[in-house]
Length: 339
Image (cartoon, rainbow, N blue to C red):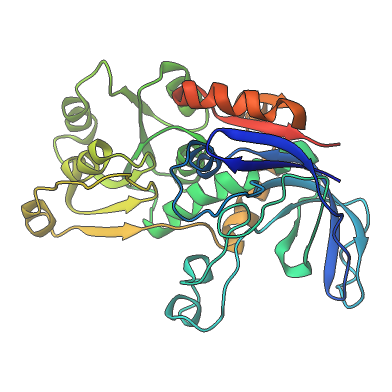
């Protein structure tokens, strides 16, 4: 079967691999669409230290059940549209014992610590296959990245009378904006791109700030009555945005960090103490976050057409990735179509 493989930095090609075999307790899915994630872009650029090449990327999946193995619950039927939970959990580490399996110390995400599913077929344990009734296989490929943003809002314990600032309006940041707005919070979206900010307003942001052309601090002070945001969600992963999050959060506020900064970050740590901040990491997503995204998408309110920047065939994946690398700030999701 066909698969897209990254053999070395900036070397991507279509290769032939063996079709996987179905065993007891597993489900064979026919992959229809796979999204390129930021981690895949870093792998392509040679900046992902968790990846050992050659690697098949892909963990944002829209698929259809092809066959069901023995011992799988009867609720899984051939032809169902599904997405995949791409994470593993050991069941033994501190995170797993505390019920936070998304942050398992020994997690292996598809396409990162293990081979991904940017290929025609995949086999997974049935409990990693997530039905998405009424959602097309194409749109199922958007569920996982949005669930990461949904999870960050849960980590921030956002409630309806709070002001939430989301820094970064990519797919993950959009998920955070949607979830915070659904919880009744007032959302400030921050990005460098006016097109992304316009979409952020469409999905629930009450205020938008272009950090390239506006003074972020002045705008946040204006929108917050001089207090700062109750919760700041960092969804970029740069030193500047990490510092911005700490600067703009209110006294006794919460900062939730999703993005990985690629270099050291220098903070005025006095703010940690003076503001008595809660600074929290947010990693991956829990099954409840997947279910919440699916419920949101089933309402028909998700602007899926605007979140999909481009659809390419496997043979066009390398060119698409190269284009994304040249202009990352303009892309939501590139999907590779196998069906």
